[in-house]
Amino acid sequence: MKKRGILHAQLISCIAALGHKDTYMIGDAGMPIPPGVQVIDLAVTAGVPTFRQVMDAVLEEAVVEGYTLADEIMENNPELLQYIKEKLPDVEGKYLPHEELKKMSAKCRFAIRTGEFTPYPNIILTAGVAF
Image 1 (cartoon, rainbow, N blue to C red):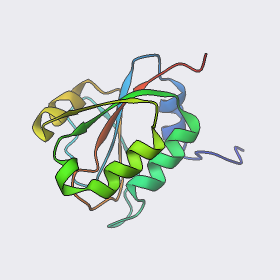
Image 2 (cartoon, rainbow, N blue to C red; image 1 turned 90 degrees about the vertical axis):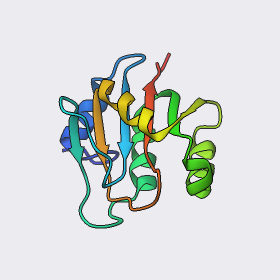
Image 3 (cartoon, rainbow, N blue to C red; image 1 turned 60 degrees about the vertical axis):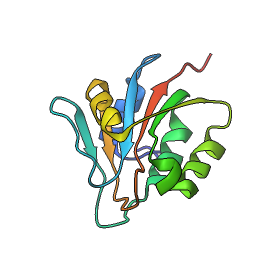
Image 4 (tube, rainbow, N blue to C red; image 1 turned 45 degrees about the horizontal axis):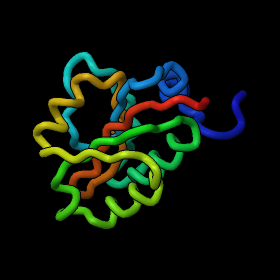
């Protein structure tokens, strides 16, 4: 039995299968996931688990070399944006309109649905390499 880190079997399996440049998403409870993208639904109730809890767990397991956010996060959720920048200080971030982020999510290997209920807490992460 695994005793630390991500214990959710489906989630850790998806993270372990990532290759360099693969993309995946962490999103809120209402983010539409395009057909064909594997969904790892962690949402239990409003706010459980939070985006931050899931992001913290994922970052303990995965190398990230880039991320994409919706432009709208700057105005509508600056506290979460600050958290993301602090968590990924040396990682290049890109911004585009929320509608474009939704389109981009169709190319993700998988999407993690959280219980987050704040505006625009959706991020597409690009896998890096550990060497």
